[in-house]
Length: 321
Ligand SMILES: [Zn+2]
Image (cartoon, rainbow, N blue to C red; front, side, top):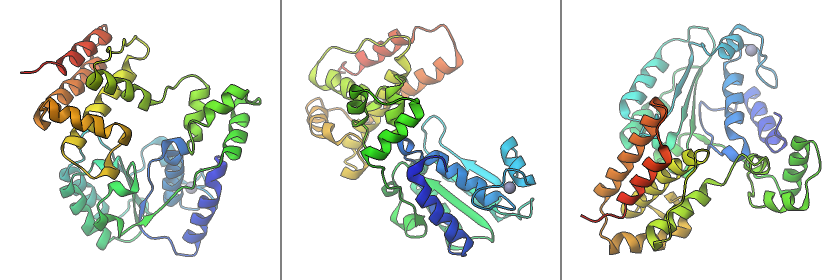
């Protein structure tokens, strides 16, 4: 495990596995800034390997099939275009998991974006959790553990990642950059507590905190500040921020539990605005659908003036029927 703060949880995990204290259902939250996706991928390979030691061997038939992306006993479910993961997908998965492993080893299913499972889909998964078939491992990666239904949570092992302190983060950053940090970089890295990978991306200049984009869109929507001026190289981030913001507004309008909101600092003003302007969930969903469509067409066609198209969508948010 190359990320130092993940070494201890990994060591513990391998010890539990070797002592047969490793259950079949696991929840590993998708903490990107901590390197959780890499950790989970390492686990998937470990579980499928025929002769693992501290990690997957990388040489057995199973490891080679994984490396080629053609392992018949590995199943992956993920949301497409941020859409919900429906019951059909989960039913299909649970049926596949009931079949005998074709490599005489384990079967592993990794459900990414697990927070997007519908309630029906989550319920369909419950049965598999209650009556697992032999040598079958199920891994769920929601954004946060609390995104899963309690009935699911109570049937799985919940993994947590402890966040590295500033000293660990900064020494790791120094190593990654191959030089010591400037004072400005030290300060900047502290803006991403518990997310060293995010801090590294910020220092390399190829990342702006997505939350900053959302905050700016929010003030244009709610407080009549000028709309942002997206450019060719950041327009995708503006589009993603638009989707994130509309989804947040829908969550607020539907009065979901506080802990499911992503930008709690914006909740109160957003709530007042939604009420004052009498904006319904239906309208928000309409705007969201337009944004998804925009993302779809920009992936399929080139030569579109995306900054202009996106600005036109924002203007619709201000029009009242
Ligand atoms: Zn192997």
